[in-house]
Length: 213
Image 1 (cartoon, one colour):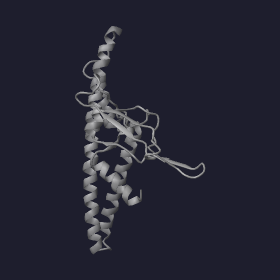
Image 2 (image 1 turned 30 degrees about the horizontal axis):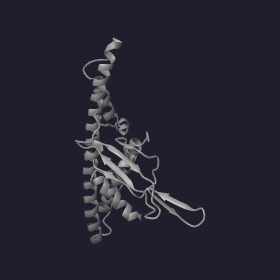
Image 3 (image 1 turned 30 degrees about the vertical axis):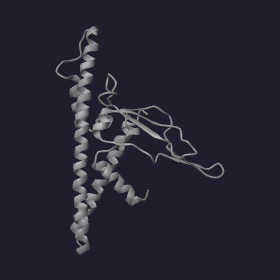
Image 4 (image 1 turned 90 degrees about the horizontal axis):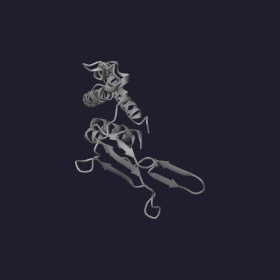
């Protein structure tokens, strides 16, 4: 994928809040095989890559499911079938799969809210017999808080991308008319830098989500 296509692809996925399902903890991997393309050349040279992906929205990410890269059928294609199951009303497990977005812990404000949700209005019990019930309720509070913060973060990123893209488009149009306008050049540079920062933050979030895989 060339640079222009790569930027457009990342822009589209971030704008629509899409994430590679293989990198999410909410999707259980049924196969160890991750590569979906195997281009065997003459001799011992072999190139493999993950060019086939399922990109899922925030709603599907929270619903979860399972994903696997099946064995390829050489006579038909050198691409391995990628199979995904999304939990719905009828096939969801009795205890819905949930994941914790640990990238939020790098932000002090989000970390503080999560810690406050963990403690809640009741301190940890002194009686060991009361611990299981307290732990279950505290964990539920933390997961709900984490989900809320994760949604808000994604929405904020989407709004930032749209704003930066609009500024970049307007600045490029204006520079076509006034190529020496330093103020517009500064706006263009700042907006492009902010957009790169959002892309990097998204990549870091996905790395955290896949840290246990």
